[in-house]
Image (cartoon, rainbow, N blue to C red):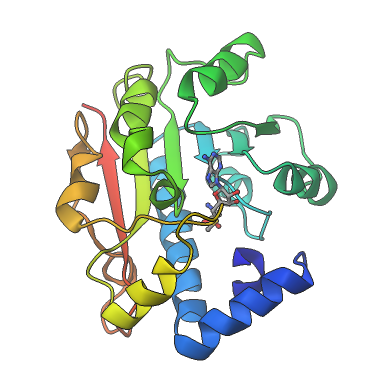
Length: 242
Ligand SMILES: C[S@@+](CC[C@H](N)C(=O)[O-])C[C@H]1O[C@@H](n2cnc3c(N)ncnc32)[C@H](O)[C@@H]1O
């Protein structure tokens, strides 16, 4: 569905139906999907410009150009990128759509089992945890329910990261308009259920990182002044491990 909202062609009828239903209630979510994507690419650019050469995109979704490796490699051609998603359909698309140049890998992994992902990264020598890594969790954590302990997931990755590593998160905000939250409540008890959280809750995910300015704010504010507000609010934040 996210691929459909981003204007991609790798989606199914059921994705388009659900996407159209959401768009009929909140047409601006298409714009928001682009703002969110732009935030992610900006975070990758900032990390690459700060000298980071390894990128771990958790909950990467179906590839949509430009991707993390394309942006990172414009700045540092040798950047290593690992895409991780728990959806085998996404993985199949990654295999088919990414030409997968050397140093770009797609893994099947569930962020709720961070140690399994870390094991794969280490045993396959995909990342050198002695060097900084930029971790992106873009529009993924709101699929992790409170009883699945999202803060502990981030802590498991953080504890492995070298100083200078980056963490970029976007997260659906509980300050979104009530009619939007009502539509989302319809996902309860489905595989697409979401738990939108407050800015304070999202900020708490950056424990152990220094938050970069402007902090955890609607993603538009990371991009440029004057972008329209959206009734569905997506918070974005970038932290640096001291
Ligand atoms: C809204 S999409 C975002 C995709 C991408 N991060 C982006 O911003 O374009 C959410 C993605 O997170 C993945 N996802 C959700 N829960 C996950 C989990 N527990 N482990 C790994 N991936 C997950 C979904 O399969 C989906 O591809």
